[in-house]
Image (tube, rainbow, N blue to C red; front, side, top):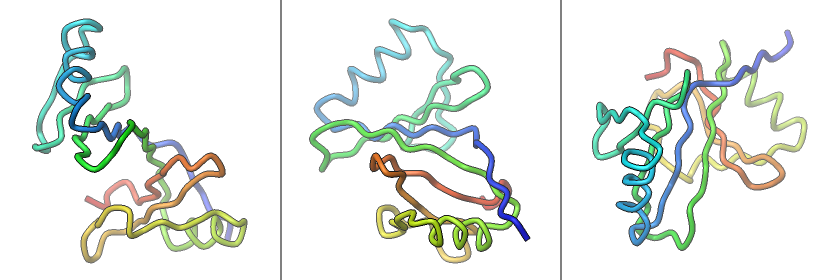
Length: 120
């Protein structure tokens, strides 16, 4: 069976505390994106068909962007990625017991959540 992986709808931006409020203001007040806050403390904005989540990251010195990938079978997909040399980085953020997915990094160290669409 071949692993099926597709782009997800969520984009997370991990922003250092000293840039957090200014970043929120940029997307809200300057760009004018529609905000949402249904998973506080994370705050987000509608970005076309996607959701841009802005997470405050107190220990960070610079912002990071994290992407989401969907798969109908997370074990198959994560196994496929590992066999192809992709680095797993599950300790980066706890997804909770029983979550059907995990974290990987691309060769440029961009974090990707690989998950079944109904994992939450």
